[in-house]
Amino acid sequence: MTVYGRLLQMRDEASLVEAVGYLREMGYSRMETFAPWALEGLEPPRTGRRIAPSMLIAGLFGGVGTLVLQQVSAHAYPIDAGGRPLASWPAFVPAALEVAILFAVIAGVFAFFAGSRPALYRPEFNVEWFDEASRDGFLLLIRADDPYWDEHRSTHDAERLHPLRHAEVPA
Amino acid sequence: MSAAAITDEIAGIALRRHGGRGWWILFAMSLALTVMLAGGIVVLLVRGVGIWGIDMPVAWSFAITNYVWWIGIGMAGTFISAALHLTRQGWRSALSRHAEAMTLCALAVSGLFPVLHLGRPWFAYWIMPYPDKMGLWPQWRSALTWDFFAIGTYVVVSALYFYVGQLPDLAAVRDRATTRGRQVFYALLALGWRGEAADWRRHATLTRLLAALAVPLVFSVHSMVALDFSEGLLPGWHSTIFPPFFVAGALFSGIAMVILLSLAMRRAYGLGRYITDVHLDKLAKLMLAAGCVVTYGYAAEVFTAYYGGDPFETAVIAHRLHGAYAWTFWSTVALNSVAIQALWWPAARRNRLVLVLVSAGVLAGMWLERFMLIVTSLYRDYLPSSWGMFYPTLWDIVFLLGSIGLFGLLFLLFVRWLPVLAIAELRRTEALR
Image (cartoon, rainbow over all chains, first blue to last red):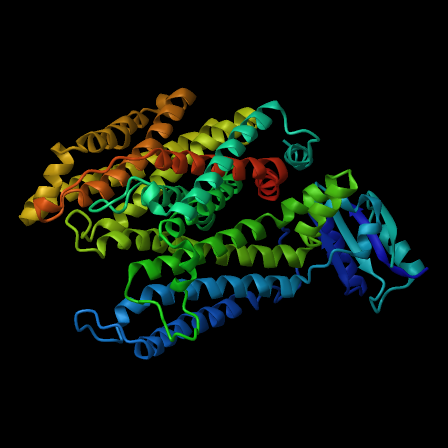
């Protein structure tokens, strides 16, 4: 049976943060932490930095695109209302604004899911007490694809962190 | 309360095996009203909008009133959730989720009316810009086209905001579910959320950005609804104050609905530890503030009509104040401007009975206000030969009650199947305390 990693449940927020720092110092680099709320300073740097730019680009595309669409269609299907100019820019703003927001939001949600890569199955779900992470558990996973991973040493390292419990995650 | 207790309690509400007798009674009532609405829609499709009391000159009435009323109610949910998120008001956690759900349910109901009102609802898609063989394009200068974009965007954005916001909560329910069917159901909804540090970071970034876009969206959407009226040249409608006035009215009625739903949920599920008197007190203050802006709007409309001196504007105001529908104006003032003054007293803001009565009054008052604004501008045309009255038919009542039933049905489904409060946020607020 192949191994995906080792899952540890730490006592609290502080001991989880401490354990991550300790393991990093030892040389581990592929770790994941699971907590019931966002913990400061644990996420890899540059996480989620694509979300805002993709929203900006999509928003601009939607807004400018809608303005262009209105301009084109106002000439393709001219409606003469009291001799007003066909390119009625002030009246074109509302639809463009709404479409800009719509595109930005949809792009943001896509960027979020692209980053977090939703999957219905994850190997760590096999550990019976993994559901503590959505309650009040602070879990730490050392992945077996870590270059520093060694089954025996990693088990020993895990024990040295004094977790509440730890278990092997089957792949 | 500990994070574990909060999670277990709120997830437990979604995972109960039975909804409870009260839930079933309300569900049956809402379902009956919704079936009635569905019947009404069938009759409407067969016989046309003539089944309602509308005619010339009053061609807009209950349907448009219901539309504006429901979309107004829908404004407050996103506003409470997003604006309080941006201003870092921790107390919003206990209110945001059901307020957002209320927004979605109200929008679903609201969207029915403009489509049904078209006369030929099956051509509703003509308002969309799409390349068709006839070479036809929408009239971009029309507020109705803006409305389509505003509402369409608002529906999509509030649905995504609602869904993305509760991914961690759906995961919490998934992890507590014991039956296979429920595990699969919530697992599909939670999309494998694990509470991973990088995911939390992305989630925080996304919700903050969505909130930042949702707030101007809320204001723009109801401003577009107001422009449906003020773009028309009718005295009483053609007014620059309409957009802010409508936005304030929308928040006003929406907050009233949030107060009623909060009180009902608090009682039904014993959520007093989360939705406390402090929350209700703050909501009541918000409602009072919105009510004062609305009252200013009423005063400004009367003042500008007389100050402007346009005889038709003055005549419409005179008809509103003294005409055949004067009772709607004075009831509106009584419910929306006078009754809420009780909320200046802290004791009134903490008294559940007073809150229920004032909020229900505000909801009724805001419906009457929209009815009054629509009908009093229409029933007296420029020429006395074009004057006429509006009398609702039974079908008007069916659609009004049916819309309330449909809203209730959707909201009841929400409280039965989804976590009613924002579990993850409450946990975090508790941990930071």
